[in-house]
Image 1 (cartoon, rainbow, N blue to C red):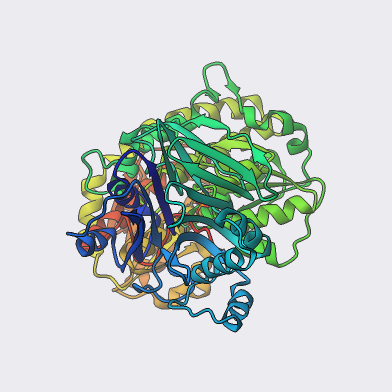
Image 2 (cartoon, helix red, strand yellow; image 1 turned 30 degrees about the vertical axis):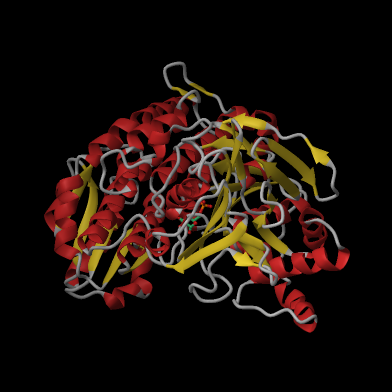
Length: 612
Ligand code: G6P
């Protein structure tokens, strides 16, 4: 979703901002723009399309400036177009602003401004806001900073905004509520961005700006204030991230790199927590909540997209291990149906980015109702992590491909650790089963490495089925959410319609779709449902459907029935999803590539969805 970048300091600002925008391309966007102060004059360049198109458009212009702001826009108010792209300017042409988020009461503000004679050139809420700030500035005869503060008190919604002001050429102003903003602190320079990826190559010292804070930046000065104009002390943190983590490292796509990183990232998610030899599990972020967790009436998992699928797997895990009822909720639905939540309920918010607006809002409402909130997040210091009372980071490293892969398997590993830890504290698991599952989890990274060796085979299967119009994905038990995730991956990357279903439920509808043109992917590893899944495969074959099956090594039965099989190592059914999802990620990837699509940045999708 929208990305913002800015620079102020001794370097040429334009190249820093353009490079930063390229680093943020993974978030998903449809137009882009920059504003800079060249020879004291405010210049704005913006374009529908990719950052490279903006660069072509600007070629040959005098871009010298030591201050610049830039934006990648994912359209909300108004179609993707040059005029709706950011930066947006004030009516007097002196202020330029980029904005990430949504101003919910912009219609009302616009009405007021129109009645005062303002004219607008775009359909955006952003243009309304910068006009509003300018209006306050001129009617109150105050500084831009003061006008911004007054304006934000009227604004309803979520935002990160950055402003450059022609009359204050050595100052950048930023404000945040509900959308992420990181400031990189260099020597005589500052960098601002939606996440750390545009900053990491210049400095590792960063400040995460909090909600309702305003930052006033000069090259060598950072002043942080709250909305009541009180000075705040910036908390400078060290980024624990290397540049290599956000580059492709020889792979054709980030997605493929991230799929192949999984043996390491799953290992990283378990590191320092799981000690199978000693039979020990340590989760520091849950320690003080363990009593409440083991006595919980109910665990409610809130999440979106792929993270929601991880939540579904966790439902099976936690109910089985801990005998605590678990509900898995789409964050967007949970919030608005006035759910019954109270003391004794524990919410677990699962999110890669830690910035998903729907998940954040769901957490806030559950918190108000007295529930305790735990976070399972990948991005350290993210909004969801900060709103949580405790939790566990997934430590999968930055995920750039829009379709989530390594973050998902790290979520599964961490949720499994959480289930085991609660079960241990509650005494709902035998010592033998506990130890067995610790051993199984420890073995997962190696088994994932074996599953990745099937890359070429999966590519050949992808070539065979890439022209199918629809796909059906089926699984039961722990593999049912993996069928959903496989279908989602295919949709996201290849734009082929795909549905995931519980294998048995297929008889109640989707079976009507089955004919010789429908590939049906079965996630059919050996588990307690195996015989039933074999029957489901027979039902598909009887109707001439094409069966692609992910099976356990040594399985002769399904090998003899399916059109194509992908064989993964044997494992306990509780950890099997972490392995069986690997070939489904590869299948979606190869079909997307074979269709010539941009798998890292699929159309219309955003990596981090910061609007509700
Ligand atoms: C977007 C992304 C998905 C992701 C979902 C939830 O839709 O494209 O890959 O699963 O948001 O994101 P989160 O960061 O909360 O896991």
